[in-house]
Length: 131
Image 1 (tube, rainbow, N blue to C red):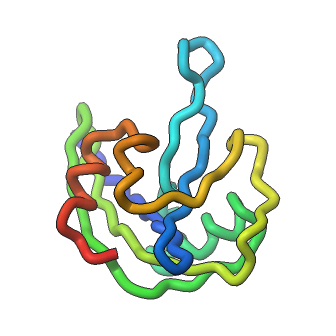
Image 2 (image 1 turned 135 degrees about the vertical axis):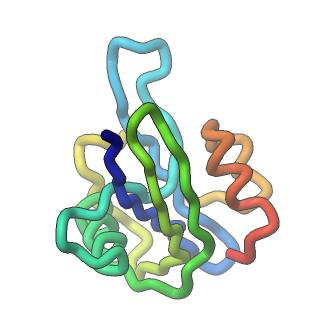
């Protein structure tokens, strides 16, 4: 029997730039870091809106607020159905205290997404979406 996981994505925006994080995955692979937006699972009983704010606080060490829902997505990986909500968010501070899972961050323009983000699903999702 399959299971369902709910994920949230926080696309943090400041004026005309977007925050991407260099997330560490595994030091046994050639490129252990990948650029991505704030991203994570919704915990059992947690509201998705609360989850994206929690992840911003945990990953960046600052408070974030939701500006809008950008899009939703759905994907099946093996026996897991992943449902996701992507939010456009803002933060008051632009200097962060990243957790050890991250090797850095950059503020980039939308036209630079393909230069940083390798996940084609994410790139396809953001095409044509007002952020």
